[in-house]
Length: 304
Image 1 (cartoon, rainbow, N blue to C red):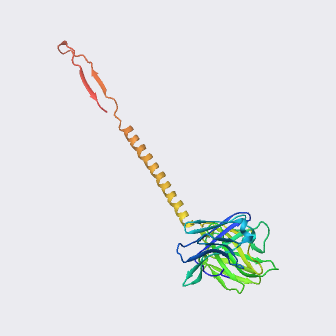
Image 2 (image 1 turned 30 degrees about the vertical axis):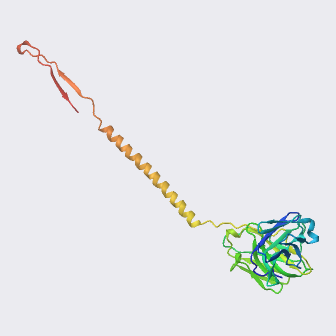
Image 3 (image 1 turned 180 degrees about the vertical axis):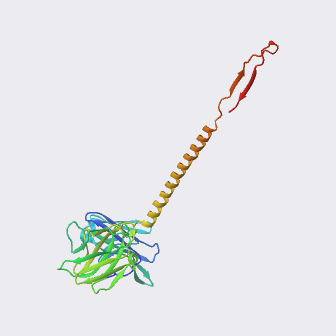
């Protein structure tokens, strides 16, 4: 099985039973290309093959649910009304004529997760976690006792679909880039406990356990998965500094207001005490016998 290999590119498609999915395989315009194929990895069968001359073959069991169209250099395959049994690892491939021989080349891989509305073979816990950035969480994938796995995946399936971990039944593992140096696991009989460390905001997603089960022709997936939402850590130091800064501004503003009021008050009082009083005019209306005349009017002013 090619599940643990590092293929050219891998898509994760997660849907509920009854939905539709589309897989796009690239086609070349060279005359050397003979046919483009979409095949499954688990108990391999060709789902569809389309030749350069547009001759096609569709797996009879899927014929009434499968459509295809050529879009430029791409072959788009759509599968309608998907069932749990459609969960699989799908490989795009092409046959190239080279020196009189046919060579098979693999392209994009699509891991299709069809979640059934009934309980499946794989049990998973917890259903929901809400850790803070930098913390760690553990996800447990467990098989029902009557089954044996050939390999178990942990997949991110919604916000940023990608593989997280693949562990074979021989306990060989592949940790994919999303959690390089941040993942550890332990496997005991039919249970795997996967611990994800130093969680970051973009790790928020739905994580699904999916298993390649012996004697099953499809990928068995947990129907609910684990929803993980990462809480951002508030920078308390910056928060305290901000409040201190705002408090200082408020104190300065209050002191400035009080100082302004005091200055205005002192200016008004000074003007009040320095205000000039009105002049008082006195007239000396005294009489004199000198020459029998009325003397003066002697006018003087006292200016306080």
